[in-house]
Length: 322
Ligand SMILES: [Zn+2]
Ligand SMILES: [Zn+2]
Image 1 (cartoon, rainbow, N blue to C red):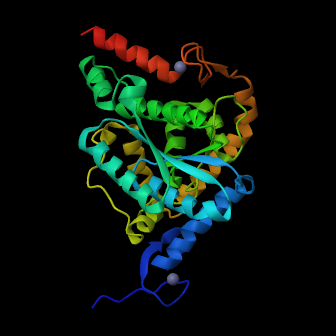
Image 2 (cartoon, rainbow, N blue to C red; image 1 turned 135 degrees about the horizontal axis):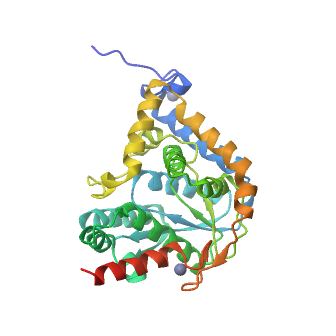
Image 3 (tube, rainbow, N blue to C red; image 1 turned 180 degrees about the vertical axis):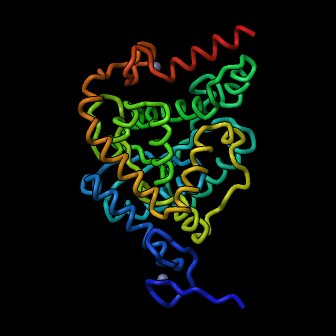
């Protein structure tokens, strides 16, 4: 017989997760509180909690576990803290994968009574993710699918938020995502990105037309988010993105998970380093970067032409050459 492990906090119910860095076995209810306390902590720490009253939030809802958790938790907070929110789903046009996620998003929003808006990448950017991938493959370009898709999605979210006159954009990024992004910036030697990411620690950005971000799951490990998701009975899709395995993030993710396994709490320590470094270099690095507006679309950019417009032009050019 397998011995039942009891929750270390309530000492009553069966544990569903072992949190090694904290030395805690937690039951469903106590994990739920643990995750939601982390959300409150990051909202308080960034000072955003006190400013939410009367605000309008756009939430990026992709249909994945993290964005569903973030939507669910923010929706719970919306009454107590008196703010409005609308979910936005960016449809990348990745066949069944996008279709299933879209259905899940619509279903969740109806259940929770949240308004939603669906934005088609094809309609807005003139190209879907699979079309972009096709062009990149045919022309043997080294740009990865996730880079194009990521740039376009971020761009569209900001555009929709401006269009909706929203005060904040909420994303489902968890602690693992943050750590991976930091390591990827280190590998690329991208000091600007590290400084810019420091903005997500609650420095409101003062760039016109760039809507400030909120990341409720910033302190939540991916594993905790997954178990929260499962134990809340949310609907999961069976498909994962067909392009994810081409991403550098995939490699980094495995590497960091291995480090965490050997040294529990490693991810927290990397996150703390990221924050300290970001704070220290932020002023120096960012003061030398002049924020302007893209000559083509008018969106904020550190260059004459923003990355989204640059990619769009590149894809058109590449498609004409083969
Ligand atoms: Zn418990
Ligand atoms: Zn542009």
